[in-house]
Amino acid sequence: MPLELFLDLHSQPCRSVFIFAKKNNIAFEFKKIDLAAGEQYGEEFGKISIMRKVPVMKDGDFILTESVAILKYMAEKFKTPDHWYPADLQRRARVNEYLAWQHSAMRTHGSKVFWFKAMIPILTGAEVPKEKMDSAMEDLNMSLKLFEDKFLQDRPFVAGDQISLADLVAIVEVMQPVGVGVDVFKDRPKLSAWRERVKKELGMALFDEAHDVIMNVGNLPQTFKDSGMLEFLKPRIQKLFN
Ligand SMILES: N[C@@H](CCC(=O)N[C@@H](CS)C(=O)NCC(=O)O)C(=O)O
Image (tube, rainbow, N blue to C red; front, top):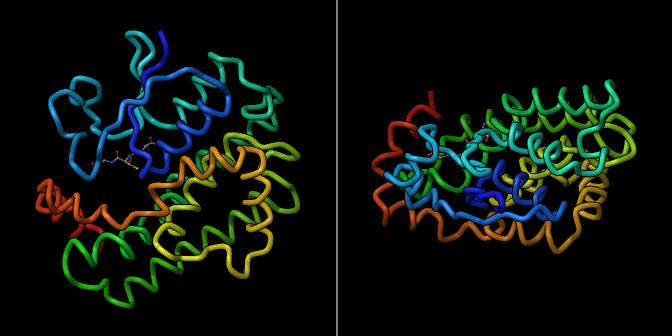
C-alpha cells in the first residue's frame, strides 16, 4: 500500500515532503487538506492527527507528523541516495544542524513576512504598521544572512557538494516570502546561485509544480473569508502583533 501524505502545498513543510517523495519516486496518495478552508479542524482529519497541522504521513497503521521526521523516515525506509541524509557522521550532523535551527529562524521569519504582506491586510482590512513590517523584514534578513554566512559559506550546498534535506527544507521556506512579492534573492548573489543549483537538482518542473500555489496566492484570503476561518484566526493574528 502506498504512503498517504496529507498536504496543502501552500505550506512550506508540505512542499518539502511532496518534493522529496516525488523526486525519489516514492509512491504516495496525495490527500489534500485545504488549510484555508479549515479542513485541518474537521472530524476526519482529527482522527489522523490531533495536532491539526500538515504535513502528516500515514504508512499503513503508522501515522507520523512533523515534516523533518517524515523526511527522515522516507529517506531511511526507501533508502534514498545517501546525499539526502548522509551516513557520514559529520555530514549528517551538518544537515541536522540546519534542520534544528531553521524552525525558530528561517521558518518563523519567512512565515511572518508572508502573513504580514499577504494575509493580514486582506483579513483585517488594515495594513500592518510600518514598524512591525520593518522589524519582520529585519528578522528575515538576519536569517538569510546567517544562512549564507554560516550554513552555506563557500559550499555549493549546506552539507557540501551535494544537495541534502537541509537544502530542500531551506528552499521551500525561502520561497514563502517570494510568493508575496518579497524578492529575497535581490542583491544576494550567493543565495541566488544556491537557489539555481537546488532547482537544477530537484528539476525545474517539479520545483514549479510544488511552488505553483504559493506563487499565485491571490485567492487564498477569499477562501479564508468564505470558510469562516477568518473569525477563527483573529486571536492568532492578534498574537503575531504581540
Ligand atoms: N513543525 C511542523 C509545522 C507544521 C505546520 O505548522 N503546518 C502548518 C502549515 S505550514 C499548518 O498545518 N497549519 C494549520 C493550522 O495551524 O491551522 C512541521 O514541520 O511539519
